[in-house]
Image 1 (cartoon, rainbow, N blue to C red):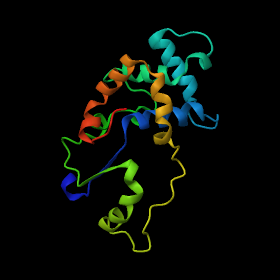
Image 2 (image 1 turned 90 degrees about the horizontal axis):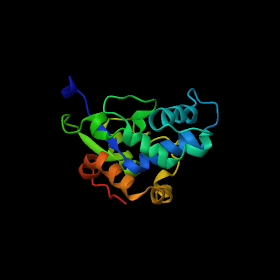
Image 3 (image 1 turned 90 degrees about the vertical axis):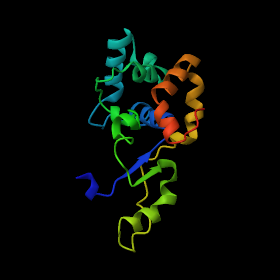
Image 4 (image 1 turned 60 degrees about the vertical axis):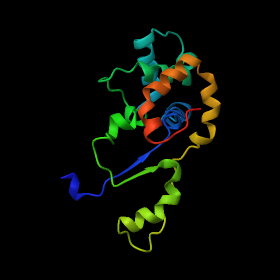
Length: 170
């Protein structure tokens, strides 16, 4: 069935994806979302690591990364597609994608993709994305807060994504 479809995949730097998730779901939590992610995250951190006290004290980026790294292979968590590796989610080694692009280059790719997909000539650009949160610009502020062993574990978890899609590890 897949042979009859055009298959495209967009990837993103793994650390940018994790920073983006943390910023959107924790730091910018407004209370209007369907899931209270900071509360959910606090519960998961208590369950996995025995944290107690106020969630503001332990629902940190560092602990969010610790939780991701401690997530079992078959353990599903709310929002985990936001940080699960591309290799686990989209299986690029088993699916012959017609196009693999990087999220960071989507605006430049858009005209080609729209032509390739046979979109109307009047649609020359993708709609503006109101959801970009600048994670790629601020990732360097989050990364130094991780101790060396967490950095190595993070790289190990996402190794195939870093190598396959030629992302630099900070």
